[in-house]
Length: 336
Image (cartoon, rainbow, N blue to C red; front, side, top):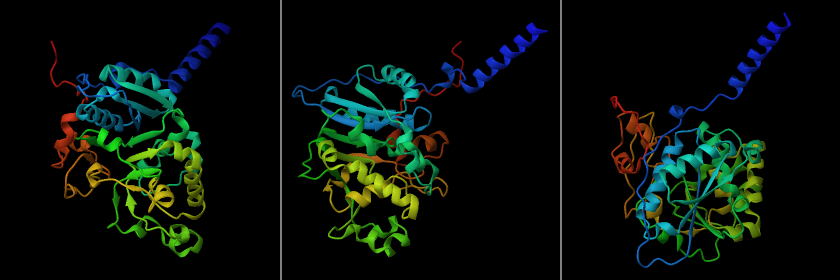
């Protein structure tokens, strides 16, 4: 009887281990085609361009990140001078390393652990669940997570492609500003905060002596040294705590950046963030490009190009994203 009891106990333990820590099968992991090797042009110096992105192995956004990464190195004059800093949760490191090295064998990169507990207690619910994921807030901690030797960074979202030499964005002068990004002053700035915010004199006075304009945080050039010196991570966290108590906005990680930086950033050409191309999947809305030249296309919004392409209902501009998609779809036919 004791043997039977021991056997039953062992089976139950194995079952619990399987449930709590299910094995990862190769067939369940996303597969990407290997990207071509891109080499430096003749006149490249030894200077390094630093780019930061988040990588989420457990979501479809990884497919967007891979496409964005390919677009950067494909259009760079000096792709070998580009170093990528990827923020991710540690449990995904093994799978991410395999994915990156098999897809981009020549890529210069490093992975940094972003601990979701850093920010989870500060996150308030927003109008879209996707905006509430801790990794969306990782950009706030770039100055803390990256080596102190990295003094400047370009931050890029996972739903964009670059169609120009990223060195042009890297080389903009910040002129003593901490952050550079395209500004959109025609947008109604009051819409980004609730009535409670504007009716509260202490809150609304935040923008005193500033002319705040909207900017999208999916593309930013950041002086990390100035950020560290002036403690901007703590300033952003302050507004997240205020939000927890007073509910002064509804848009995830964007409003704290507007509260801290709007009206005090270096204006970058609009060509470097043609944003809003995601439109709205639920209502079938497709967006056009903004007037003017284009260096970066950004599918911010509810609709993502890979989802619309897979559903055979793409928007016209989604076809500009498709050539950078390295996702290896399952074959419809047997190889035999």
